Image 1: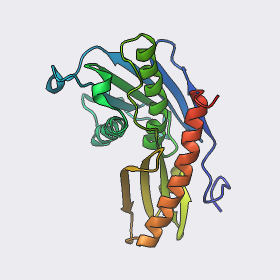
Image 2 (image 1 turned 60 degrees about the vertical axis):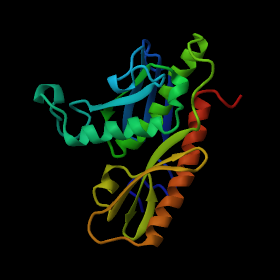
Image 3 (image 1 turned 120 degrees about the horizontal axis):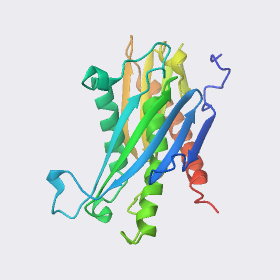
Length: 240
């Protein structure tokens, strides 16, 4: 039995609240159980130097955890004077996965920056960030269309992410911290609405895992992400 009494195939209760931040061009308050994150998108009329005069835009992300988002206080990275390797890895993951479903030429020479701030962490902060960031990104791109700065949404697909793991020999979907910290295998899947794989991060914490165990996690991830994309569409009012 899972700590929160879910079935192995069940997501935690998920909430996607769009337009959460008043001043952002796009935003989403995302909850995966007790993991709570604010994702906010900012449109910048500039691109990194390597993209100047190319006609292409850019999507990037920043990620951070508030000091009391965890059981013990996390020191602010600004006070420390540098980001941790984990922070850099997660924000690069968010940025590159979002870029995978955007036609950057269709964005024009502008950048959209997604800030993902973790208010409360109970496992799966990176996958929740990606799932909420898509909602914020979609809103920002729609604002560009509404302002007639671009002619159409430059999105090629939906995208969401979810964690899976092997615990006591059983494949489980959407791990919370209690499960993640004891899992024999921990994996994160980023998958598009059309079912294409964008990124997979999987590691054995102790003993190696089999292809059959990996296939079981992938099957769970695909089912979970299909549900998450339905929730994204509902939050964005795309299914009227």
